[in-house]
Image (cartoon, rainbow, N blue to C red; front, side, top):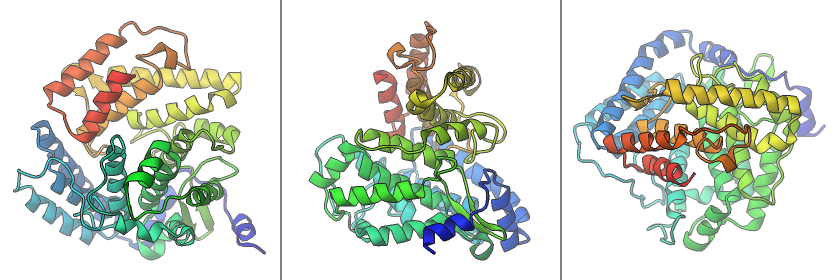
Length: 414
């Protein structure tokens, strides 16, 4: 019997909640709940500290990289002693308030000098190369740290290791690492401008047509034929659990859509699943701690936009009503005139991220541009005034980091 047949035979029904993962962590360590509850507010305090510096015009790039490492150990593992050590390093790093304003490439070709973990270094590098691809400047160093990904067989073996987490044995949930690697490779392979930049201006990563085709084969294999979704898988006492991950699915769809020659499979299942997970918690649903946020709303709205032509009339009505609720949330809850968009340190890594995803949501639904308004015929005469309010608040807060600039450029263009 083939491996694919075995996988199908022993697969359990899809579970789209955090309950199984939580149970697996408790199996690994009976004290997990107590240990995590102690550290959750510490992680939030770290993010709030960085937000305070950001409001003062200080990006604290080095400290933020220590925060990213600490956050992963706290949110995706039961190895809290690693978090404790990194929190101490983070606090010490804050004494230097004259940190670089931009990330610099390290000699291994990454933009993650202080990140250590491979997938975090890769994630930061993807962002940096995206920014470079807007011009013709080559990176200072070859992308030598990415050479391990050059062989599609080795690449797929690594991704499959990340795909299945055995939390009760290891105390580690690979979901975040899988998202970073899978989504980053999708950007490199499926975004034509980025793909051409890597081929023309970088060394160390062999992004051939054959490589791109082999990665598309992996992505198609990974997609669940029943739900249409992509997500992490988990070993449990009752089989392999496949999850319906909104964030990973959005990334796969969004990046494949960049290449008009690629086909996205199972649209009816994608649409059906997206509605079904509406009231479930992120990343396996739309909600964060029981309420909306602009990041998840953006993911859902973009899936609806790309899947619009595959929807029934009833599904389009349902999607339109959902987008209107999201818009009401963005304008009246996420935003207030005194503070602007209110960042949530339990979700966003920075205040700039809160602005970026709010702006992205408004742009994708055509709030500022009627030609992009796929879901409704109504007018929004107040939209231009709101655009000005957002730009004014960003200037008032002196928001000028890379993410804030991306938000500002998008706001002016859409």
